[in-house]
Image 1 (cartoon, helix red, strand yellow):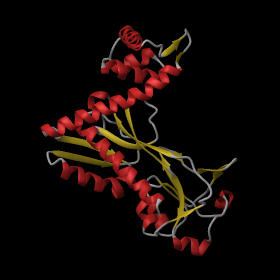
Image 2 (spheres, helix red, strand yellow):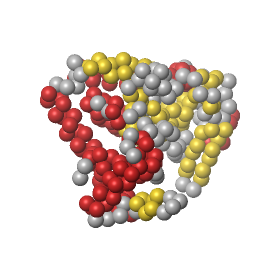
Image 3 (cartoon, rainbow, N blue to C red):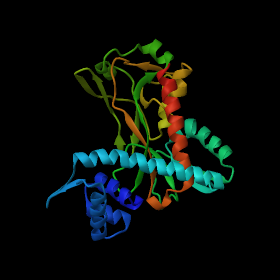
Length: 302
């Protein structure tokens, strides 16, 4: 089987369109259709049900999709090992990370990567806004949430819990909330990105579901400032567990509403196209996955 056919199959499964997938990969629709038929013939199964109105993946296609992703990931790791042996993890990697995660967590990981690959250089851009890869001259970006632009290559790094938290000083002065509705009576610390205010906090406990609209007199477009406000006792924050891992471990912040769960946030490493997925990007992806799992495990052990 051709790896190009496997990559095309994954892209079609993600976009739900042969035409759109062909466009993203820079090939004709006819060539994409032929490649899909070739793959189905090799497997001896139908991967998609095609009608005039829709393209729907089959049960066999879903099963193959899982193994296909696993196989390609294994091939990428093998290629990475080969490049490491040849000393080809080199050059400049222009990388963008969210403000809080970049300053307080990823910065140390960058140092470790540069020690491991001395021929590599990293140009770090710290910003919460999704990078314009062309204008910002960024090769790869670490961001929360899967991008709407399906033409990007999105590597899933980790699923991360959201935690409601406050400092011991704030809790001593204002008390703890025991139910999500109690948050309406507290000072909540809010974050704004590209004009959107994140002031709806969600919670689940068994069959209970709560979506609370909170208010605040402190709002910032920088997540690190929101974290600093929380540590400084200014209010209650709603943050990803990886961003506040160190604060929780050192007692600077305390987890609130432990009986209620909030939706996880997905962390992705984004590239503008498959051509930008270099050995250095793959190496960085593996480091990010490994480090995130360690941080998540350490927080859950607290």
